Amino acid sequence: MKEVAFYHKEDDNLICDVCPQHCRIEEGQPGICRGRQRYGDKLIAVNYAQAASLAVDPIEKKPLYHFMPGSVILSVGANGCNLQCLFCQNSDISQGKVPTSNLPVAELVNLAKDRGSVGVAFTYSEPLIWYEYVLDASRELHNSGSVSVLVTNGFIEEKPLKQLLPHIDAMNIDLKSIDDDFYKRLCKARLEPVQRTIRQAFEAGVHVEITHLVVTGWNDNADNISRLVSWIASVDPDIPLHLSRYFPRYHFDKPFTSEKFLSEALSTARKELNYVYLGNIAGGDGSHTTCPQCHALVVERLGYATNVQGLDGSKCSECGFLLPFRR
Image (cartoon, rainbow, N blue to C red; front, side, top):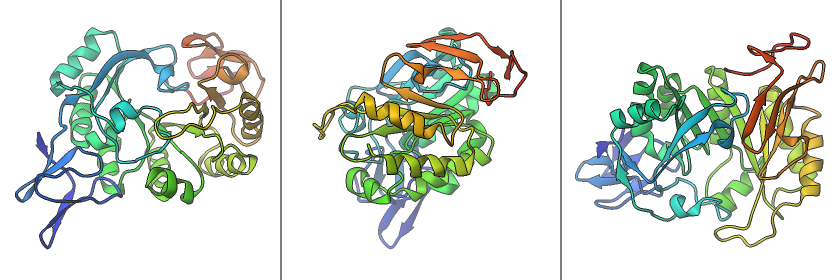
């Protein structure tokens, strides 16, 4: 356990300042994310170093398509989440509780080296509820020459994120909708902090990719895709976007996203963004990267098998065009 990095006292209340939920936490009780508890006048990260899931994954599984393609990364996650999405695709650890094991920072760093990994991805549930551990581990990963990656909902306050970003190499940020009402009704959250996180991370020089889960009956419409894509393009049209297929999970039983709509969304998104992919769907051209200048195939992906066939460093080997890859 460790004291929470950002919180304040207001009258007799301790208020967590890591994320925009700003939970008022009573003695012995957890906040929404279940990672913080109050003990007297201190707010404690009771989830510190408590790992619920650990595996070595292809980096494309995060998904990160433009960051160290073809590599593997040690992936680790904790129980809990600061959102309460009714359609959660990983509710066993985000909303439930699975057994954990103690994983000190030094052991995590050594595991990454021993497994042939390029570093560590904090993923599976929401890594920002594990803030203190992620911050400490990311510093040590950089000291050891390894990378640190976040797969996150982006729902964090500006000051904690500013302290964390110098130690983060890449982020896949989940932009669930371009409508605030969607966030409020289905996730008990807000859109603006997520948009701020995307801009803040991108402007800090972190490699950013975005995932958008297309949920049947809620955001599977052309207007949502057009507005979402236009907003991403306003940050940078080179940000890779992953349009991901939804499957019925948790409290949602609506049918999975139609392939027809995903194909249409792919075409729409590619009018404004240079790199758009389809997730949770097999086959087609929604997995490959082509050069936007000469249209040569530069990275071929079949499942999680990646063939980097047309890159010279980060340039197209056919025409020399510089592509947004970090290798």
